[in-house]
Length: 191
Image 1 (cartoon, rainbow, N blue to C red):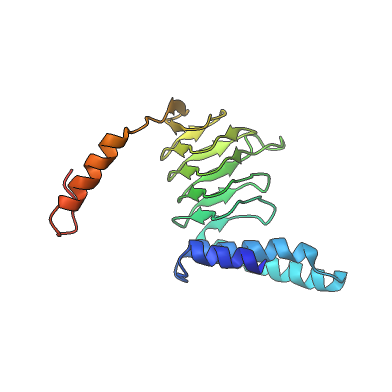
Image 2: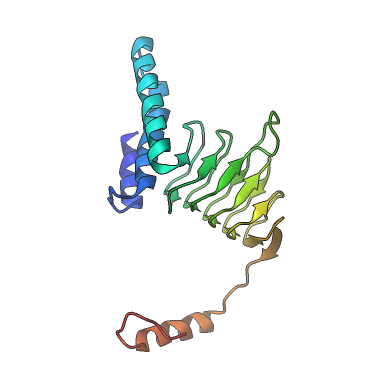
């Protein structure tokens, strides 16, 4: 638990004002409590977890049950309106924004999304059902994803259409970097 908390602390840059960090601390405690022995201590920890989870839901508007599987450096970028099913699974370096729903497609039917690594989920997105989201996927703001998304893709629209990510040639990246370096020091880059 403490190693995971240290990683969360680094992910959120030690900023205690970020509600995502609060939620992750409660989440880590909720997972750790299952390992507590003897049973009466586990019952006390479970009660404390339920109180802390309710408190974090009220203060942050984020529901992240301790049954969710999250990878390394899971980051909740903005708080509020985030609902995640306990059946969901996230890979490493996933970013999630406000008003996102990740869950079951129909009440009473099991199966929530499984996310790969380096997935970026835009604000207001809805991802539901027993679907697979590949590595290096971007899900656009307000997209409704109802089908599998292959790696290196973008999902946009209602319902979401899947498009391959366009690779930026190395020359374009170098040119953009040079323009940014040559931009005046006003804090604004020229496009």
